[in-house]
Amino acid sequence: MLKDRGVDVIFGIPGVHNQEMYRGIEDAGITHVLARHEQGAGFMADGYARASGKPGVAYVITGPGLCNIMTPMGQAYSDSVPVLVISSCLDETVATRGQLHQMKDQRAAAETVCDWSEEARSASAAYALIDRAFGEFETTRKRPKHIQVPIAQLQSQAPTGWDTERSVTGTLNPPHHDVAKVFADSLAAAQKPIFVVGGGAVSAGGPVAEVIRKSGAASFATYAGRGLICDDPLHFGAYLPRPDSAAIFAQADLVVSVGTDLAEVDLWRDELGATCAHIRINTDDEVIAKLGAGDSGFKCDAGLFFDAVLDLMTQEGHSTWKAEDIAASRAHWRAEVDAERPGIVPVCDALRDCVPEGTMIYSDMTQLAYTAKEVWDMDRPGHWHHPTGFGTLGYATPAAIGGAVARPGLPTMAIIGDYGFHYTMAELGVAVELKLPLPIILWDNTKLGEIEDSMVRAQIAPNAVVAHNPDFCKLAEAFGAKAVAPTSLNDMQDVVSAAFDADGPTIIYLTPDILNAS
Image (cartoon, rainbow, N blue to C red; front, side):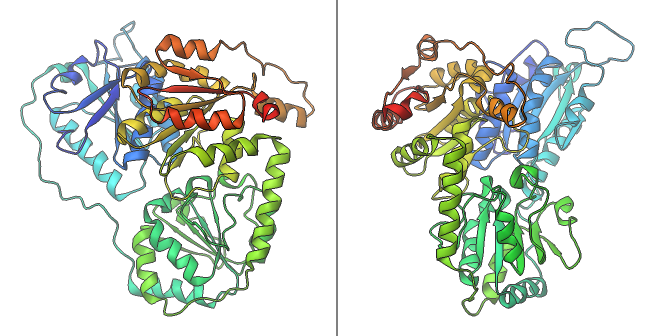
């Protein structure tokens, strides 16, 4: 059934409780990728989904297997990633205690970090829940789902097959003409309109970008929306979290947010800063409901919405935003980033200049990535993935593996810090096993640098921010991966270029010393 629904790859780990889920995988033509830890399996499914646009599927066992994948489920929930986790579960937990992998309420535990968690107590229920999950992935906000199946059911014969005919369509309805006209008229009447584009608008980038350009509006991108607006002199880039960007929004007479919650992790302040009308375009009812006096919300797919708006825009807009002012703001904010994390901006610039066109990047919670997300302009949307919402460490390596599996022959790269690498370093073995040409930029500042800086700002004596690291290059070689420690930015560029053509993953080990050498 999964194969019939378009599933080509499953990430997971077999155990005695879920081994029946593995019966017939190869006969169905599905590839199974063996993770080293369920957390890795979940991040691989997440990375696969972000790269392919298809749901990522993971298999885990009862109890600890499900608990281990809950962190990736939470990450996928906060970042709107379609992941389907299928687990086994015990047949009965109320009257019996002391069973292997027993939890008090496994289904309820999973529900705390995903869209929904349900138990299939029959074959027909399992089929119905799978179709429910895949249908919702296509027509609502993409968030992870969990289905658990009792062991006795997994071991039993399925009395019926599944329905191969599906009636689910893959898009929301286009907006009514009058709705699109109201928006187009509001945009045309504005003198200083400004857009914020988020990850939810990425798949509809063309029409959104064209409406922004044609209207003469200024724009910001969230970290997830980078690359949607390119080569536009009125684009402020991804500097939305800069505190004084609030003053920019205070100048606007219309704000339009597309495919973004404008959450804390987007703004890092309480308010956007605008005092004018705000139009929200989103598929999530909860986001649409966040309206103030004079605001409007349109629940619609961004691509369909802006296709309709384009048809109604008969002439170019003439806003009063000035390209030279926006360029000055960008230069000021770039200098701020460089001052906050001295020397990292040149590393980001050098990396950007050497990666192949169309590289998909997965980053972790590390200062190198924090810097890059602001100063690295992407030339296309949906090609930089970061654990923005849940903010987990250890995401980048396994997620990049999943992304590379989804895009064979296309360039993929990971950026991770020394501490985050500890979380999922075992998944390096998967990349070796699959012979993935994956550069892994490992930034080692020998500490939890961001936490140390935060403690200092809070006048707390830094504590528990330094951990003993292994020799990462020797560790990589022990896994069978390549490892290089370039001593200059020029050397780094050569090493990175070569890593994309290697026959396996390459750890590219960088320390702050590379700044002095360059």
